Length: 299
Image (cartoon, rainbow, N blue to C red):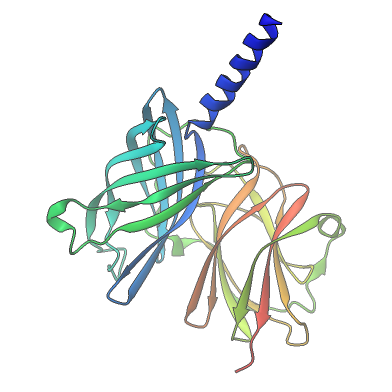
């Protein structure tokens, strides 16, 4: 009886200890709202915890470019508080990423865990001297449950000038003649979001917002292939899609051609509806395809 009691105590302690860690890949959308001006940062934190020490990489997409920065800090398991030492980030009012202003921001986040999800909620903030000119960059990061803790890169890859240097497909895709594939139809769809669309066509940018691990994906619009198998990198794949006006909604799906080195396949997708921009994180594997429902709103 005593041995069973010891086993239960040890099990509870082990589960609790795992819950008090921030290892893994965290995805979130950061926002700044100041004087009616709103800016967003789509970001991924790859964190590795050793004791209370935390190291990692912050990858974030701002306007037309992807940025990376090394992270270091600490995690207090009692207070469930993650502190990130000052890191260089582009100023939220920068109009160009080529000559934008950089500022130093420190992070403070609180870990919340449940049976189904883990989140880090908090903000990157400037020092007292710049607090009134650099407002907080608020984030809610979600832990990728499908991704185990990963090895942290010791150096940053060459990203190129901007994300716009990728494959460009400027012509609108004719979805009526696009091919259908049985392997796509055999997988289930997971609706990530429903987006209201005002235009007859949309522009799409797709890229890997984390570690390059040779993910390969295809895109399907209304079950027809509009982007054949393409390797994801930090440079955006671009295409323009014509929507079917006769459908209640159009479905844009990301199909995993492989699982890369770190399953599942996760990508950032930027959707342009005229001057309106939507930012989404899509995750697909061999069982399901992440899908966005595009619902047309007539003017």
